Image (cartoon, rainbow, N blue to C red; front, side, top):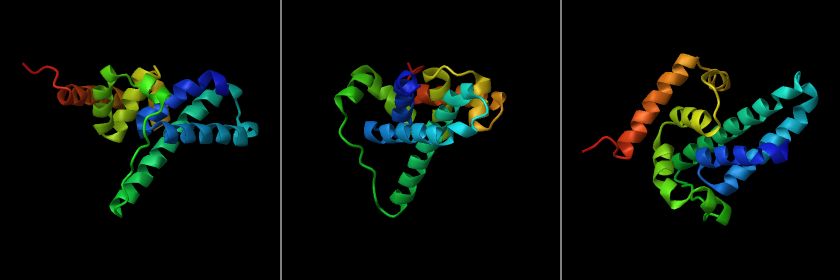
Length: 155
């Protein structure tokens, strides 16, 4: 399972936390958590959803810690991009990724889960604890905000 899903989960984590090294830690912790709780899984088929939710929660934790540290004056400085990260984020995508990171966390999460991991509105709703209608409205607002940031629709 690790080999099959690691790359997609790593991309998700990089988008959410902004750097490869932290993303790798988040994904690794998610898989460790899965192994630790494997015997408690009622349905082994739900392991992928468990790990995906664990990555999302781990990324949220990282972002919360950064906010707390920023309040006391400790700024997060992402490490220099690795060759793998540079390949994942080619120059033509950097601007979009920066705009995505400027969105509110919930909007980021909805867009990444919908368009990057190709989850349905129902799956996203279950994962985030919101309704499918809220997923749709959040996605719409997030896309509008991205378009504004990227200057689309301006003449």
